[in-house]
Length: 164
Image 1 (cartoon, one colour):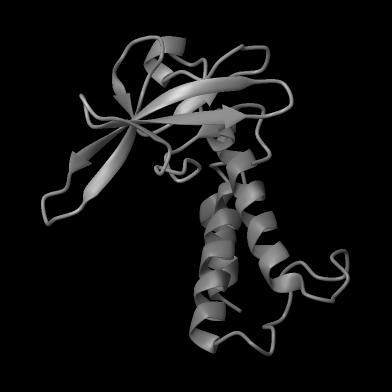
Image 2 (cartoon, rainbow, N blue to C red):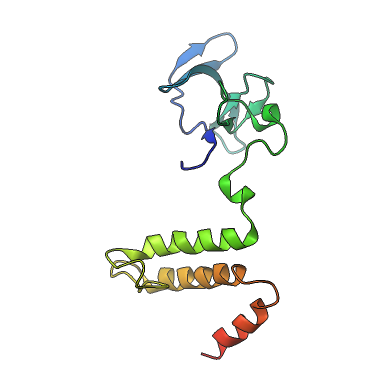
């Protein structure tokens, strides 16, 4: 993930680790070049059968779906342990205009294929893509484009787009 923060979810963990027979918990060892940390995984039953795995936060002992490690931190912890506005996904720190540009770029990357990115504002439909999917992406691209204009220009842009 290309954010400044490093989130860790149970999907990253292999719940086949060491089993603590007394509590029914498993230990997961996260190992990277700069960090080695043991984290407890706890299974909770789902309403329609099966189970869902959660981390137990090393700092607060609360169950968490995601553990975070901000830059410079020495361990993964839940967002409650880090406090308000310390950890979040990149999009949560972007302005409305920046989210619009980021959304457009994401769609453009999906459609661009072998075309020159500078040549196309919105690339044509790839051969392998269904028209319905492409049309949905075009609608989302236009919605993101509306986010990139100042609030006073958005109605004018919508009218111009409808008149085409």
